[in-house]
Length: 572
Image (cartoon, rainbow, N blue to C red; front, side, top):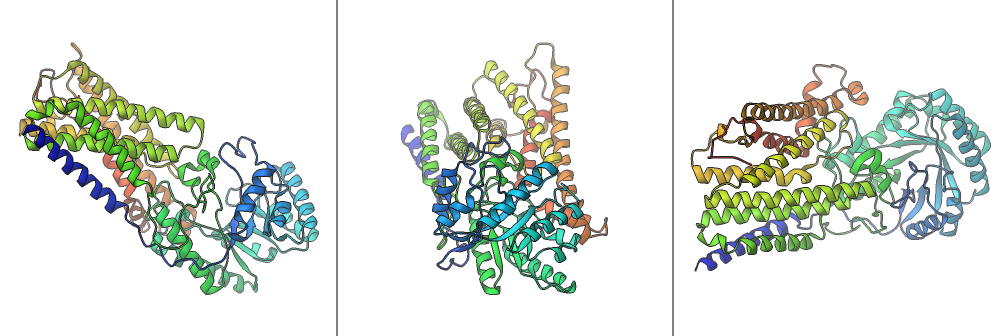
């Protein structure tokens, strides 16, 4: 009979988890199906995993040929960003596969490098007039403050005098408003409209309307200057993974919605566009984090990120994740099966639910972190964090059992858990400070700390069930060092204080990132009146709020004042 009770609880938890996973991964409507045919243009950078301009490891000719063969049935044009560093034969291969090229020339602060780029650009454009239809001199040079607008204009004029194709300069749309003289210099206006990256990030529901609004704004500005030139949306897209900004949430479903919506708007109004980008770029994770590496219509291994028609599933392999997590859960249940036979139903459900949560968190962490690791060191970090979480989960499961079974504490286990939580807390502190000061492209590490956070909540639940009168002071790590109680209390409280201050600093940092944004300041010049708007972008960021909750939960056991002889608790 006792075994039957456990089996029923196991079945209930597995079915409940299956229902939750099934519901969370239902196919979602993602806008109007794309009509048959090719995209007008895709940004093309054939960097595969292990290749990076940062490491001076450039694409091989066969990579370019293979990638363009793959894109031949998908796009009319490609946009390139440089003619050097392995990209020299791109026009040749594009012509072979029937793809036209919007050829870019990369400009930066180095005059010597720029001179070589411009010379090679002119030679290539003139050598392939049947393939290269338009030319773009420089990409976001003014946004990066790499050179003055006067120096840029000199390069534009130099290329215009040497080639017959239309010539432009590409930058975020606000740069054309900041430097209106550019309207007079280019043959066509190339603007980047990336709702996710705006100083005032745009949620997915308003993203395509924002694109239309900006095109009309630039069009009106050009007309006011007596210019009636074609406009190319030189970059527009949406990330499939990474950190949230305001209401702008990266996801596969949202990327699908944006691309489908963009094509619909472009076709309706006759907009010329280039989608960023053809392939995910692993190397961009070095400077731009997870979000920078996940803008492609195709993955780094050249597989479609989403379907062009029909509903979309965010995690298409969720059944595998569920199966592995359930396997881990059943292993844990098997190890404790005989020991659990004395538990009442409520205690049994709490123990097994926590075990299932730990298994699910481990699988989710492994899946997400491995898929968003793009180098040896990133994968080494992933393995390290998985191992740390696995060991912590084993310790927490045993500690939960001890509390629910009301057996004497294991001093060795308690000591190890205390040390583990101190390490995780300090690492969370480092992560939070980084997010506060350099967090523009850093992802919130929720998956990495889910087990420590759920562990605290689980231990509190077990302690509450055991003692019935749990209070704040009993939520502290019990001092386990002979004669070190006062010193340990002080250290614990300092950890709690630092974590709480870091959470506040992250809120301030996120708000200031919006509040002091150049375009934000131009749009909202009243410094004080604009603060509520900046705060609004901060407090609509669900990922940020979840991470702050995680940090504050991790601080809980370091705040209390449990004494050396307090046997009612110790989260460790």
